[in-house]
Length: 296
Image (cartoon, rainbow, N blue to C red):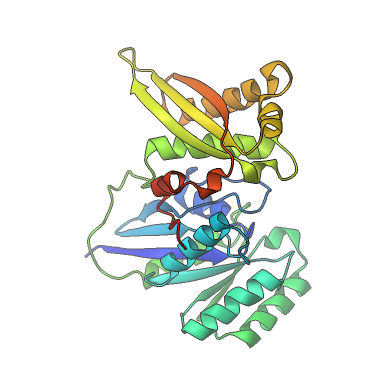
């Protein structure tokens, strides 16, 4: 009898959810950057161990929303939590019990959602601080289990994996055993470009950006032609993304193209266009591809 189930990862922004998903899946299915709020929608990573298939659901960081996009992201995270077979709350060992994490714990307690505590980034904090944090969190809420891991190095991930396998219900696989994500290539390509924008641009500009894959054509020679639009809110931002003489957008395009070629195992012709769309976050068309609720 096979087993299959869903594991939803919750946590404050930049707790390491995407890094953990990529580590457990063994492939990059969710983009990562040092900036908070990199993940904007739920992303499913899939991995199989013997007769068990686990679907890891990476969610946006939960924080106090201020704008429409913030509300949609937080709502998407909580919607994935309700029906999960296992819920993991990731807490950054360095940051400890901040206001965002405390608010998440309060919500879990209020809704009576059984949850596993996962203290992450243990490679970057002293053991005394980690143990004190675990005790403090368990004093606030009755977590079903507590694990301490480093998603970056893989320490402790094997034990977590064994536990998750033991908690999965019996049932048929939902995805092909070779599939690592349910994210369509068009969306994944847009995410990869947005990751390069996050990594290359500083300050608050990344949060004013959106990337859409406008067209995708598979050529007769086996290559792919991809056209994407980077949306910004003001002309000044457009100039920053383009860079002097177009140097910045060429660098971003080169980095995105190289990763896409590795992912798709074919030559990629990537064309990036930068357009100003004031208040793009108020456009419901940009929410639909990601399954975000515009009216959240």
